[in-house]
Image (cartoon, rainbow, N blue to C red):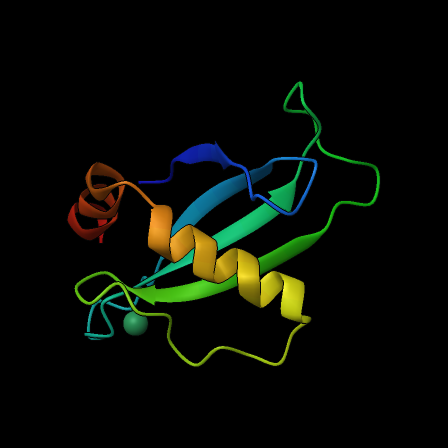
Length: 97
Ligand SMILES: [Zn+2]
């Protein structure tokens, strides 16, 4: 299953689309969801050169797995997202895994 929704970060003027994808290896037990963020404008259309980033999150512990090197503002957004993602949304990711 793939779903989308939109989030805003306190330090950025435009929202981001969040699209989830899951490991498709039937033998893998990684328990991770990949969340792909793409900057959009206020009407939900993609920016011309959108900021994009993605994170891997354990669906059970809700911890980010192996954060890559990235600009500090993106790290701040990731932290904000992980802190504020509503529980029903987290549950949905876990059930979708
Ligand atoms: Zn996996």
